[in-house]
Image (tube, rainbow, N blue to C red; front, side, top):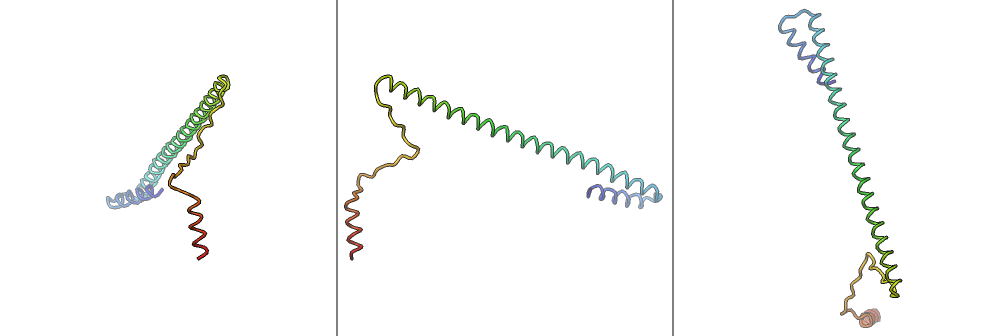
Length: 124
């Protein structure tokens, strides 16, 4: 709309400078406003369509990633169940899987010495 108005003003100024009649100037200004408005509407619709398409592709990609993740989780569960079944058939107890949080023990840590140090410090 703004570019249409600007184009109409420029067309009006140029027409006035060349000495055109008022009716001709008004007609040129109206045509310029209409042309620029239509071009602007077309560009706006094109940009909105591209934005919508990108959003749909993003949603589709997220959905595919979620499906792949679910499939991997199901495969891992199936493999764990199969391994457990194999252990049961062999007569061996199933091995516990490591948890997501693996704690590493510090072999230099002696809790009894630490507790004595803390309690002696409190008594002082």
